[in-house]
Image (tube, rainbow, N blue to C red; front, side, top):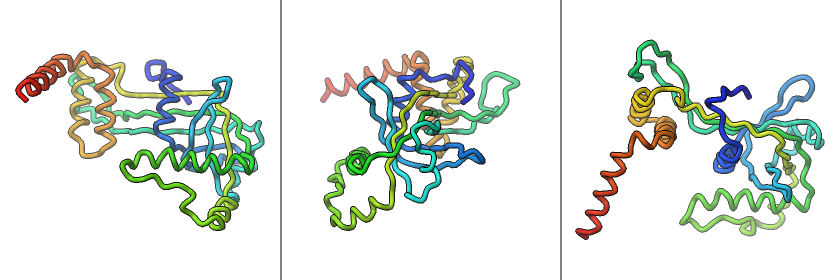
Length: 228
């Protein structure tokens, strides 16, 4: 992935971003054309600290022919993105652009054994069920054993050993404080959730722009607490 140095994401931050998302598009080249599939995944680490992505594919998916432990695959994990109008900048002679966050993970993939598939599926559902709290998590033991086994036979679990981590976070880092604040404020007013998410990410990049606002909010909270 081509990423200008000013937009490159630290490895630790890139992996944390991928882990938080838990969903991406995996792709590999079969010698004639690229093959891709969108999948949820679990990220963990080997004993030596190597990142690993576990996911599964339909048994008929042609990608599985490339799960030989040698052929490199790429997983693209996309975050929020938002269009930026040139009119939003304070500085003149600007052009429209697109802000976004993404991480690409690359490495060979092997097939999980039959004994590894069940724990993978349980870990995957548990990961996302926790996001639905306070709902009681769904677990696979709620299914009839026969039905669960039949569905497991229709898929193949795989794990990618990640040997390359690339992150790109394009959030107007190269712009002035005035332009950064203007674009951030404009995005915050957009109705699209992704635009608001990008606005919040931009805000975190330059906390000094909001130091006075933060101080005022803290003072108000302390006053309310005292009065209460």
